[in-house]
Amino acid sequence: MTIEYFMSTDGKNTEIKIAGDCDMYSVREFYSSIEKILLTGCDKAILDLNGVDYLDSSGVGAIIRIIRLAKEKQITLRFRGIQNTPRKVLEMSNILSLITEE
Image 1 (cartoon, helix red, strand yellow):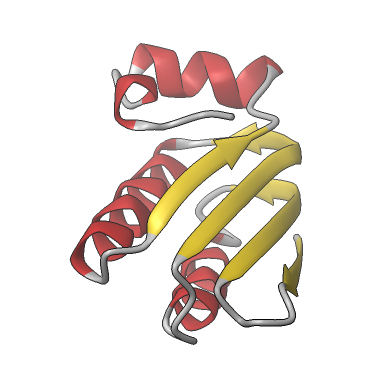
Image 2 (tube, rainbow, N blue to C red):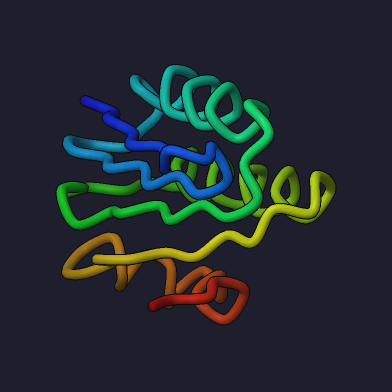
C-alpha cells in the first residue's frame, strides 16, 4: 500500500491518495498514516481511493474510524474515486451512505 498526500500552501486543504489493498495486513499502516495527516491541522481533506483495488472488513472499519476522527476534529472529509470492489464492499456494509463523495 502506498499513501501520498499533498497539502495546500496554506496548510488548510489536504489530498490523500491511496493505492493498493486495504485489508487486515495493511489496515494498521492505512489508519495510522491517515490519522497523522489529519491531525496536522487541516480544515478539509479529500481521500482519493481510486488506486485501491481491494477492501475488506478491516478496511471498512478503518474508514469508519477516519470518518469519526474527521468529525471529532471538525475536518470536512470528502472521498473520491471509490470504484469496483471497494464500492461494492462499502455498499454492502451500508457505509457508502456515510461518505460524502465529490
